[in-house]
Image 1 (spheres, helix red, strand yellow):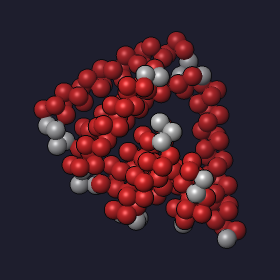
Image 2 (tube, helix red, strand yellow):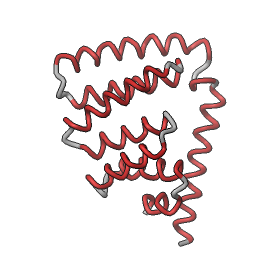
Image 3 (cartoon, helix red, strand yellow):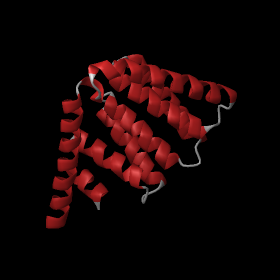
Amino acid sequence: MRRHRALLAAGALVAAGTALAVQAAGPGGVSPGDAGAEVAALSRSIDFFERRLAGDPENFLAAGHLAERYVLRYRLAADEADVRRAEAVARRAVDVSPDPAGALARLSSIHLAQHEFAEALTAAERAVGEDPSDAPALGALFDAAMASGRYERAEWALR
């Protein structure tokens, strides 16, 4: 039991350190002068992956990269449409991915970004159900359980 508490404490320290690093860098994690350049670069990358996905709707890799880039741009530009786009792409990726655990873990993190804790927990539980040894799925379960106040479940995910 002491080991599990230590793991929970370590996880909390990592989360706190990440939050401080992002806060120190300013809104969105970059300095204000760099934000415009970051958004422009992400937008070009998004255009690329949107074209790839339009040409091959079953391309789960392109879908995953596109969803991640939408979330990154959302964090920089705070355009809620980006996080909704990320969720839609991530949902489609769950259906076509040979690794549903990874796709569901990504969907869970997108729900967390929107403060949809119950949905995040559901997606993370499904991810772990697909592959109980998948590290990203277990990480998503830990994050969603912590955000939902399900500390025993979070501790289980660390085991």
